[in-house]
Image (tube, rainbow, N blue to C red; front, side, top):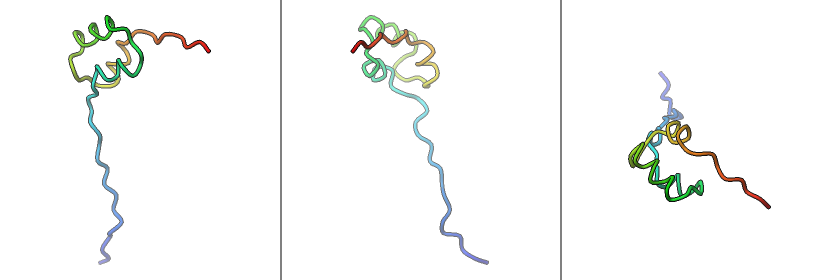
Length: 61
């Protein structure tokens, strides 16, 4: 039998993301960041963060 040495192993990343880091990256106001932390805690899945975050402010050029 042949030894298969080219096997691929998928290592999943972290399921929960840092809520405060997401708020800072997306440019949320400090009041909104506090609200998100109260609602979700320090770590939450990405879909919960995106569904509960306020709409992004427009970027004018």
